[in-house]
Image (cartoon, rainbow, N blue to C red; front, side, top):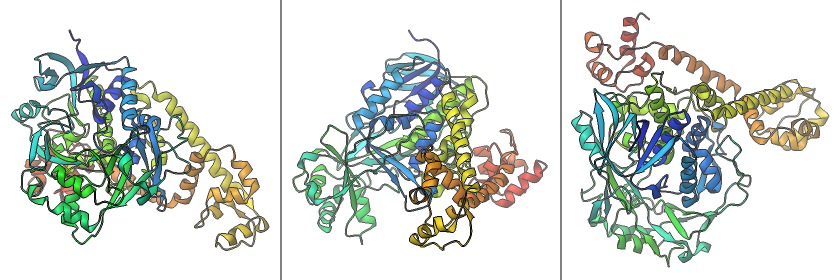
Amino acid sequence: MFPTYDVIVVGAGHAGCEAAVAAANMGSRVLLATMNMQTIAQMSCNPAMGGVAKGQIVREVDALGGYSGIVTDHTMIQFRMLNLSKGPAMWSPRAQSDRMLFAQKWRMMLEANQNIDFWQEMVNGLLIEDGRAVGVRTGMGLEIRSKSVVLTNGTFLNGVIHIGEKQFGGGRAGEKAATGITEQLVSLGFESGRMKTGTPPRVDGRSLDWSRMETQPGDDNPARFSFTETPALTQQRPCHITYTTPKVHDLLRTGFDRSPMFNGRIRGIGPRYCPSIEDKIDRFADKERHQLFVEPEGWDTCEIYVNGFSSSLPEDVQYKALQLVPGFENVKMFRPGYAIEYDYFPPTQLTTSLETKLIKNLFFAGQINGTTGYEEAASQGLMAGLNAHLAIHEMEPLVLKRSEAYIGVLIDDLVNKGTEEPYRMFTSRAEYRILLRQDNADIRLTPLVKNLGMGHVEERYNRVLEKEELTREIVRFFENYSIAPEELNRFLMENDSAPIKQKMKLHSILLRPHISIEALRKALPTVNYELTKYDSEILQLAEINMKYAGYIHKEQEMVDKMNRLESVRLHDTFDYHALPSLSTEAREKLTRIKPRTIGQASRISGVSPSDVSVLLVHVGR
């Protein structure tokens, strides 16, 4: 009935979809197995992509040939670039999406790929032979064979949903949990744990008083996520902002005695940076109000997502509290919020390619690794799909460095440090932020996948070459063009900048605070004429490269120093217990994690600089 596949992907969420297209675009024959074909790529929580650091990840996924950016551009209803008041390392794109169109577009792109087959059924076991994953077993007892397996089970592994004192099995509202896989993996020697996440109630937008809320429009000139020619966003839907009140908090507290969070029924650890509303008013009791983002679910639906009101309190308490929120006095609720507990596997059990250490050709991606967020999941799926293909062809895995991508930071953190709470990406986690900007993701990453065999990347790579050359042209113009005082001084004084007394290169003027290329174009017709042929993306990249050249150079020097440690390889068979000069903790951690390089070893929690020195001496450095 079934052929032998190259890659079987279990789960069709954000991680599973990216894993499937990554392997398929490399040439692998892929089976995407899902419990429900109608929920492929469903946005289980908020209908949005991107955000602080997450937007950078989506652009990196796109630069590596993934589809999340393309799908988002085709289905977004609002776009905002966050943190524009800060430096460019902090700029983060975010889009509000049409939930239904997002899933529909993803499915269309998956079905358009002839290398991807689909199977709708629960997978409840793996086929393991000689320490290798060779397929899956389904709930009906079917055995489907493959050369590798990627598990992207999301919140479905033994998922339990909590609403007040009610609890029932489920991986998502209205869908049953997945069983069997955790038990098998534990029997094979894997360590598992429990985590918790939650979602807010959905309400009827027709019942809200929008005049009582703040309007949050999109950008005047909305950008895109993908570096390809996706359609521009020409009209947008606004979001709105309202706030809780002390009365809301008092009402919510009346349900605390029935809260699964406070009475011990939920044991899993929830996301620190996305707490439930009851957690917020308990932990921050001094706050009189908390911000709520009122987000539309799409172009043509009245369903509204109440971002910031995640809750597992009884539904009657949620409803009564919502009625006290300004603008929600006559609210109608579509469904209450809930918490969900699910199994995950501490990611220190993985290599940096996301392959498990215990079972060859078995890869984990997404929430099974203890992460939270569509973007984090999509990036892991992409890397797992690529590396599953490379593994079965006995090729070196693609491992991104911390200096190359936020995705590299994410995977490096997971594998070396693990996580005991849902891991979310922030710009603060990356030590080379000025190098890892959202505007240069294609320049950083597309060349890395050009020669891997992904046919659709060739055109992207040519665009990168053109982008780099155009950027150099702009920089040369600024370095060579001289401007006289009589042309420039009025503009400088209007911008609180000191006038010049003799001709100066335009490059020197641009380096001054509060002076931008856009401002120079508006003030100087000659400059505007010379730069007319360049689009805003290229001009912005050139400006950043010139203004932040010193910082970029300094970070690159730090990267070069760290790369010397990354080039010193350590073998899996290295006997750390034979080195008594290492600390006891270092010997235990190094034996368990098995770092590939000295650089990776240096980032393991509990491995000190003196331990690294011992390793360097032992390998002859």
